[in-house]
Amino acid sequence: MRFSWLVIPRGPTASTPMWALVAIPEGERWNMYSTNGQIKTLVGPQVVYSWGARMVKLERLCASHSQYLWIQFTNGSCDITTGPAVVYRDPAIHQDVKVQSGTTLGDNEVLVVYRKESAEPKAESSALERSTQTVSRHLITGPCLYVPTNASEWCHDFCWHGSTSNNPEENGRKTKGATRFKKLRVCPEQTYFDVEGVRTRDDALVTVKVMLFYRLKDIDTMLRETHDPPGDFVNALSSDVVEFVASKTFEEFKSATENLNDLSVYKQLTSGAARIGFEVTNVVFRGYGAPQRLQKMHDDAIERRTKLGLDKESEEQEQKIQDMKLEREEQRLRRRRQMDAEGKTHELEMQRAVHDVKQKERAEERQAHLEHLSSLKSELGLTGDQLGSYMLAMQQGPPAKVIQLQGVASQKNVIQLQESC
Image 1 (cartoon, rainbow, N blue to C red):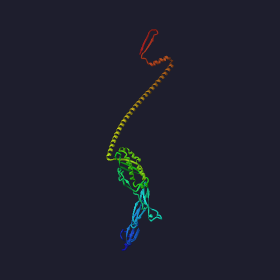
Image 2: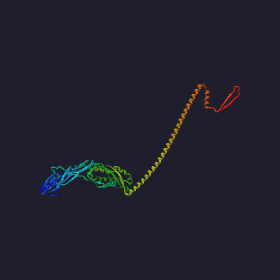
Image 3: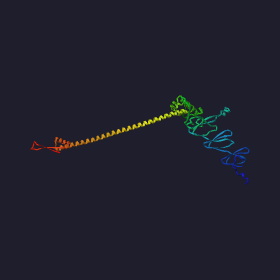
């Protein structure tokens, strides 16, 4: 039992000479440095006997589907292995191994890649000419996940004018080299520009603020003609604004600011953008700034104009109220007269209707009376004179007094008057 340590494997110990059986676990790799200088790579699981050798564990590096392994060998060459992949970093053959993430590109994003490509050597060319390499440019458009095809590739690093502040009041001032990126965007873009220190014809100093809408149309032209498109935009836009403002006084400039929304004002900007592969779609005037004293005078004038405008609006409102009152009163009077006229008309119509009814009743009575007289005449055999006397007596009504004359046959000359009431 005293020799049991010779037959029981032990786990490897890094950088320590071992005199025993060594068990390499599954999934690990170790380099065994023998005393004679030889290096042997052990892949687990396995058991070996170490005669004073040192054990060094190899670092395991793993790349997923969206990653790749950049491997630099001790002879200076490099290689790229696309994931999923696993590499054990061996100091004997690897100078460095890094896990890199692939470049994700959206719908409107483009990656500019430069790649060395070996040219096919000609039979009659010299050794120097056969070893020459050409560099080609490639545009990788999204959407995609881009992984370099070889280690000689590199991406274009853009360094453009940009804003150093997120404050909306200050991001119109552009600074050289403030924006660094690798992925180009070909979708419509917009940015703020402030053209500072522009003098009018009467020496007023103003700052013109605009918003620029543009789009990248030709990447090859842009890469060939410029290295900083926003810087070119700033220069061209400043020239157009200075030309526009310098020919006007401050008051003329204020009255003509709406023209700064017209794209035809920015001739140098549009032509310069087209020359470097861009298209300027619109320029929007965002206002202007002036020195403190001039701005105070302008603010005071604006305040006075605003106060006068408010007073005018108040007076107009009062006049409108008075006009409305008079108009409503006139409508009420007109309505009242109309109602009175309608009442009078209705009353006359009612009287006319009553009169017509009465006339009709009288006509009916006369007709009935005539029919009655006709029946009396026919029934009693009255003459015309008798019927006339009857009608007269009916018209006169009963007498107030009746005087009766009576005569005596024997006394012919004697008349007796008798009055009856």
